[in-house]
Length: 167
Image (cartoon, rainbow, N blue to C red):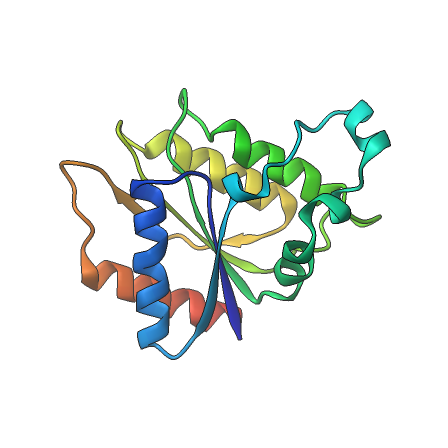
């Protein structure tokens, strides 16, 4: 089983992704971190889609995403929602094949954030968007910020829950 950890920013959220990776490794689960900034995707629109396919732009990541059994999505809060790179990624992924839900439908997802603000809005936005695509977003989530450090026991608990729902 492989869990794909997708982060929509660097710094604190990438650090959080690495904490997830360490925890899954201790649980003998293979993971891979995909930093959406590294994909450097062009802004999705109909003109861009005439020039590129989603599968082409996502490259090897497309097959890895398709093969993953479960996901962790980590994003900061931007203007009360997800950052543009997150929405852009989902747009290209949904256009990478004839079945726009092919890569994520029915798979388990865990959502998390390290946010400079409250973080509640980005978690709500990710839950709504990922559920719409057909993912089974776990009820538990990870919300951290400067005044709310990550609790190791909560991290381990949500990782174990994701494993259970990804089998």
